[in-house]
Image (cartoon, rainbow, N blue to C red):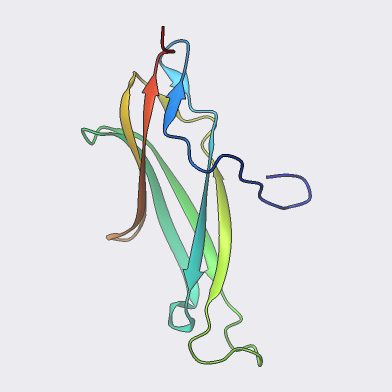
Length: 123
């Protein structure tokens, strides 16, 4: 995030995170786009979980947001609201090299999943 409130994405998605030693901080942010419909108006709570590929949890982060103003006069049936959330993962520490998953859930529903590899620098 920049101080002007805009999200700048350079390079898209990180698939390999190289660190000199482990445990190591990720020093990354996670950005995702939310699309909600009028029937989803109200309060939402999501869980963002970082875990080793064998399901050992590394970090759980909670995200809450309010979907409101669906009664706006310019909205038509079928319209949606979309927004982007940037979640800092900078201080999440991965314990060792390996494959990790970041999952986003609302209740029992899996909304998205992305994987990455944490590794020592290639020789």
